[in-house]
Amino acid sequence: MRKLMTGKQAILETLKEQNIEYIFGNPGTSEGPLIDMLGDYPNFKYIMALQESVAMGMGESYARSTNSTGFVSLHVDSGLANGIALMLDALNTGTPLVVTSANYDSRKINETKTDLAELVRPVTKWAVELDLPDQIPSALRRAFNEANSHPKGPVYVGFTSNALEGMAEMTITRSLDKFDNVLPDPIAIKQASEKLIQSKNPVLILGDRVSDDQANDEAVKFADLIGLPVYQSRGAEVSFPSSHPQYMGIHTLRSQESRDELKNHDLVLAVGMDPFDELFYWGDVILDDHANLIHIDPIYSRVGKSEPTYLGIVSNCKAALSQLNEVIGSQNSNQFSKRKTTTINEVKTRRNAYKTLVESQENWNSTPMSPARMMYEIANSLPKNAIVVDDAISNRGALRNFIKAENRDDLRGVRGQSIGGGIGATMGTQCAFPNQPVFGIIGDGSAMMTIQGLWTAANDNIPCKFIICNNGMYRVLKVNFNIYQKEVLDLDETAGENLLYSNFDTPFNVTEIAKGMGITSERITDPSEISNAIKRATDFKGPYLLDIVIDGSL
Ligand SMILES: Cc1ncc(C[n+]2csc(CCOP(=O)(O)OP(=O)(O)O)c2C)c(N)n1
Ligand SMILES: [Mg+2]
Image (cartoon, rainbow, N blue to C red; front, top):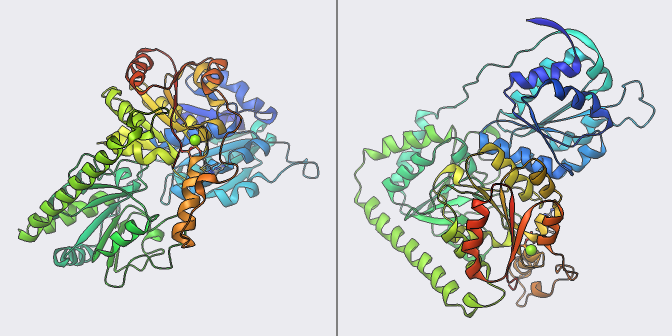
């Protein structure tokens, strides 16, 4: 129904229609009119961050945790620019976000008025600035629609003060639910099934969009059926249970061994991922000539995007996997069960080898404790219903080896190239799951990038728990420099351990910093203290921080 109202009211009415509960933001003078009006809308929870990356991190993880679109309100130009790092990551990795800011009077065109849409165009799917109040309802409707349509990503809407303060007759309504589960072409399923049945040694790699499409059970059924090994690509969402006997771990191209391993397979089935999205250049084509890639993905433009693809299937992941299961399930192949036994044995051997390696190392009981020991102790002490946010950077491997994740929401990894996401992501996840304990496991360098986020946890009493992997350095830079020298430059000797400017020579004390921001915290140096500390953190009603000192040697 059309109603006379101001632009700022139209914004808040539209957010209400879109069922927005949380506004993650940092305000400025130009946003004053909107912030002032929030007093009339007590149902919105405005979570104030002291830096825009914190607000972006919260919005990003909240969106993924709730399977909806996150809403972030930043300040004009400077504030918006501070949010760009995580907007870029959200664009590259496909998180739906609507980011807004207010701009000055549109008549100030000659005086310091920035073209905000232009500023963020490269990091958004769609960016627009509005001058008229009655542009707002339809533009915001489109913004939510764009953000949440494949390829999902951030959208920006700016409002000049003219749009905010102007009055007009407007109709506030949200778009109705959209059904966009694209079904696979039956011919493609038939061809893929035939190829999979013929294949001597297939492998399955699953990306985050398997989890987004709620296709985890179908992926397990598929793996059980044909007995192949399973990897996750990136694994920022849980797409496969990590305790499954055919689960090999996170796939990476960063070592010769893992690249060679791909060569063992005559067929790679990649589902819900971008094959093969990686930091370093490993050649224009990753797979060998004899290997066929079958790529299933809901995003049209991603299927066959970079790697030569034998068969590309545009489809919702769940629909495609369940149809493959149906067709292949009618085959009773000896080959499948033999393969399954081989795969299970291979996984067992690898898991035992890793366990023996880390536990037999002299440093299992040493001080500072090894990252593996830290993760082992955490894994054994986390409450059953805990949700883990993984921003452990170079200690992600150890985390994933010990902390198991069975279902989509058991674990959520920070994704993209920017550090500084973990503090906000831990809080955003807690906002999405208020009744479960959320533990963010975060590198000290990443944590320091957005450390003022701790204040937000205290200020809004977001009861999440932060665990800092305190190795006193940017360890991953050393790790990556070694990979670069060894694997890319082919050098015999590597110098990562001594890479300049990777150590925090002037120590900082995260425990004291946290206390200074109103967070209860403790420093831990002895692994045997971890279990009780996690219990104290869990029982504590508010946010809590554990600063765990660990070894950073390579
Ligand atoms: C915004 C931003 N600045 C700089 C970098 C470069 N960078 C990538 S990882 C990293 C260090 C992370 O250190 P920490 O969180 O302590 O984890 P660790 O490597 O020690 O495991 C840096 C500086 C980045 N990715 N993003
Ligand atoms: Mg570090």
